[in-house]
Length: 422
Image (cartoon, rainbow, N blue to C red):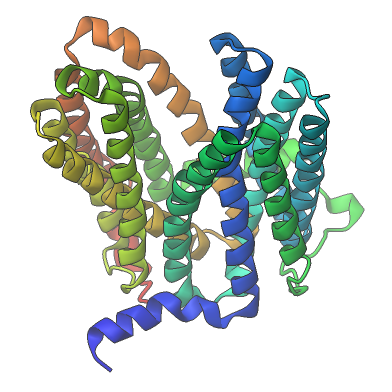
């Protein structure tokens, strides 16, 4: 067997597990439904109230649900059966989306219904993903977690940012928002049905006697203390949140202005650039999933994230679309590759009883800084030229990456904890 065949086999090994096949299918269908909902939601709101203010308020619902429950979701994942949480979230979301589809189909839907649905979807994600992250190590052996995270990393942009929104736009354009809402509801129903077939894995963390049970707040404090005293984990979170703060705003807010200045068809160009970013993320995830976990896994991850922003300098300086597409593809690929390593390290280096809380803290920090980055990008463009902002966003993260590597003593962790994958 040659090396390329061996790499392909490594990437596909998780599919030997029946439970992983079910999880992969359920997550893929759920991500597709969520991606489609982003389009259905927009046009449903516009059909009810053609107002940017109304759309902004409803769209905020998903982020608000995610933000409010992200920490609690990790505590719940560490306390209760991960399988039960996954099934419950899928079932409740299915019920909500079925209700929205019925209301839309009968013409009874109101703005608050759409906002409530978005809020429930966001809250559901806050409980689902910590449980999923903690459940995966019970389904797969440690050496297959990298491949599984890589497959998921490729699945999300292709289904959630590609197929879901694309089909949503086609369906709503050909028919009406209710038709799209029906497809979203059916997607969630199928994902819910699939999760019912997950086998009952023995939970390694047994429920403590009533007298020994801690409060939710105590569990949260324990999680925060664990992160604070685990230097590589703390500095990865610090660096990751800084990265989100630095690059998210320029890409989402300022890039459209660059395309408007440089190209005749700015809307289409902006869409192509975001697609290149998403495709790069999927490609980077797939490549890493087919390889062994790097021996210097933390160094590789941090340098992917830090060095991967350098092409943003090109975005600031170049007027050529092909060059800009290539630059964003590289940014997406290195970001995706680093995220796959990060997810794997959470599942292999963090104690099983802490994975949910650490994953939720990661979620919380990322969510908190993304809107801040988006909010400050506009005002910053009044103080400095947009190309200059992109150049700074490309140069600063590599410097921060070196700081994180040293402050987190990550080389020591790599020497102490060998995680060779075969």
